Amino acid sequence: MKILIASDMEGVTGVVDWDHVMPDRPDYPRFCRLLTGDINAAVRGAFAGGASAVAVTDGHNTSRNILIEELDERASLNCGSPLTLLSMVHGVDQGVDGVLFIGYHARAGAQNAVLDHTWSDARVANLWINDRLFGEAALNAGVCGHFDAPVLMISGDQTACAEARDMLGDLETAIVKRAVGRMAAECLPPAVTAELIERAAQRAVERLKAGNAPAPFKVEPPITLTLELAKSEMADKAMTLPGARRVQDRKIQYTAGDMLETYHAFRALVGMAR
Image (cartoon, rainbow, N blue to C red; front, top):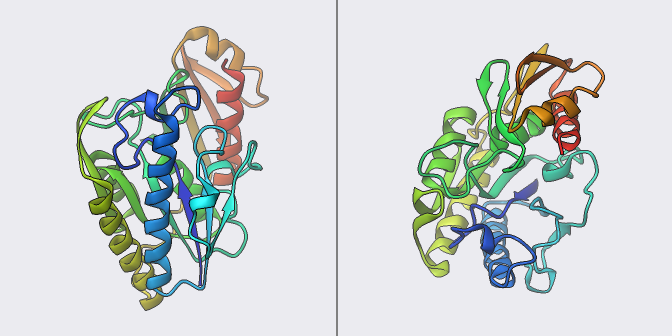
């Protein structure tokens, strides 16, 4: 049974500020260690639950955040920028049975959510897919579902975990902090969160093995992506993507045949909107 751990950083133990997750800030190395600790807890739990192989994808920023010298030796690490067209869920097309989301954050605009955003804090105001508001968890889960891989677990603050359960169903959660604002939270120490993550990962994989895990998250085609950008000039630039339609001021729409095309179109639109 092969498990993919897809990681981000804003939802990691102790993270409450952009200074904690940006490579040019002095606090960043310390939080890379905390990220690696959260990942290792998930690796331990996955193997305890019955996984035969675990791959980890570093999905934050330039994908060079996890400390490989401190990574559990049983896991492999996908890192480096760019990480192919599947980005944050690189490797999900390689025979993965289930996916664990570690260190995730809530969608842009969510209340009481540490560093809430959707892909780009500076460019994306909102994302809808088939008229439903999506964050990164649902977006990446849709790509996983395209390859029939269910998302089994998520760790992050209480709002990220609740958003994932609302969108993806009865998956396991590990709440490592309780946000009281965008840059403030009641945080649990690493020794406590490691146990929470390990137990949730173990339960998640055990459920997969027993046949009662959540189903893969499927988005039915045709799929309409609606992207609201932060500024009108960004929408001007995004309109250079063939097939894009300007529907209102800063809102761009694109219709796709499946979730993989939707993912690629979303990333292209955001990339153009600089």
